[in-house]
Image (cartoon, rainbow, N blue to C red):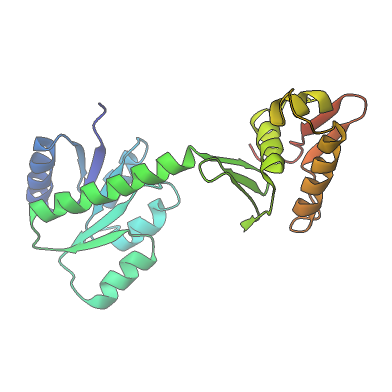
Length: 232
């Protein structure tokens, strides 16, 4: 099991050492930085969570947070002796995920860290079940399709067609193949049902996103998911 990596940024070496020793006892990997410049160098490596002091010489914690927030998407927990409400509000407004005032309990600090890392795991887990293309997103767990954030009122078969094409973007599917995969070879439905279903899918998508193509027709061959202008 890979240990979660935590970066502690504080100009007080005693605090860094205490936090490092405690968290390492609980199976975390801990790196420390005693200034903003040291912390920026440490950003070259992956970290799972950052503990950040505010009052440091040179680049203070607030400024550092604004610099690194666009470079890292991990939780940033401020740990500071500044207890004024406006400090907490500012820290959270610029990208902090939590605020812990000094002096603090190491047990509480670990509990906060555990909580944020569990939340990140849940987010990452959910992302594995989201399939996206242009403005379309499929929630594979909920069996729902969204266009520009709006849920599309697809039937079960229409949903299956969209999922089939999006999961196989480079594959051209004939009407017969779509029919077999979605309806099954023993279905009593007619082959023209595929054409009608795709027409309905396009209509429902265009009601939300009229300017983007999603299902491409290759005449004489079948249908393919259109990846034109798709990011990545």
